[in-house]
Length: 151
Image 1 (tube, rainbow, N blue to C red):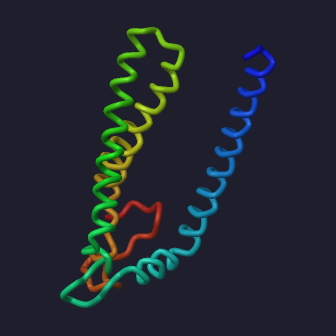
Image 2: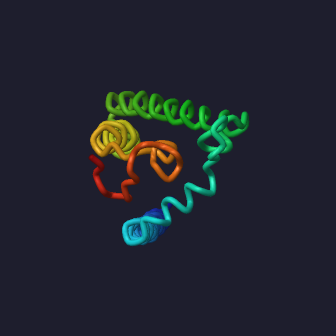
């Protein structure tokens, strides 16, 4: 590839990255605003998927084999990707590979995002009740709107 083609390809990737960032970030902000401004949306959406029958109380598809397989497959695949990314990161660090930074970003994003931020910060310290635990669905806890730390 000549220098002009490489620059054009880099510019294309850069433009797509910026577009994805702003579009994705914008959608996240709009949805966050909607759930904060109208917390009843959270209950209404949960009601669609929640079964109040005492024998099967909870998510109505929780016993579905295909959905359970998909749930477990996503967990296994994401752990596999993390292991591969860490292995590739170590390998590329010793080889002084040019794509070390991109590999490090993938590996650390998988470690910091789901493992540290979600499980260690949000879930452990916000203690937001699941739908089956709130009074609207027969539980004992009080509904807490999105982005509010519960007591």
